[in-house]
Image 1: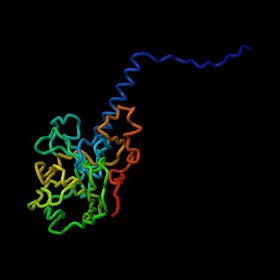
Image 2 (image 1 turned 90 degrees about the horizontal axis):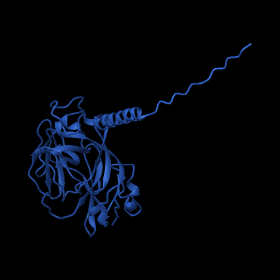
Image 3 (image 1 turned 180 degrees about the vertical axis):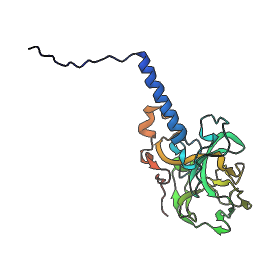
Image 4 (image 1 turned 60 degrees about the vertical axis):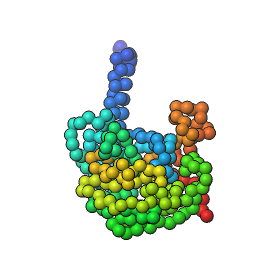
Length: 260
């Protein structure tokens, strides 16, 4: 009797066409993730020190506040307003488009909600005429964190909803330490940097930020490099990468506070 044995047939399905297909699918998947879920951003300025430093690279969740035309790369004017809208919460660190120049991405902390009255008096933040608790917790004497070659006072603020964070006080009686009252219009938010004496924010030319301008909420620091180095300069990683900041929440990265 003749025995018939099954043989597995292996088909060589490689080739240029399949390679191109895989690349296109990967690019489309990356575009969907970047547009709808998480977008990487880097910090180019010191306005959010000591919380965020120049050279920090963040993942920003796009779905936290829903989607507007600014959620899509290159901001095509497909629709107005937001869809699946979520409201920014007081204390969030958020990326948004600058209202008077929507080609620029800014990152600041949400301080004032629609209808709030915001004012700075003698360096103290007031929300609806109530002072936000502010406690001096020490100093930072590290130019990588403060950008200056001297000790800088650090004050910890606690917002009405319990969100706590550190702020820098670079200059006594600075330009932004005493302001007029700002009444936040409906559908808008008041944004401030944690580096209170070196932040272009809603106290100055940024003004109130419409909900439509929000891009997303900052969540995770996935990479951080000092010395104005590029992440592509791998040879500088041993001396410049801030290993203690990698994969930290934006509100939990170490800031080198020294108690007095």
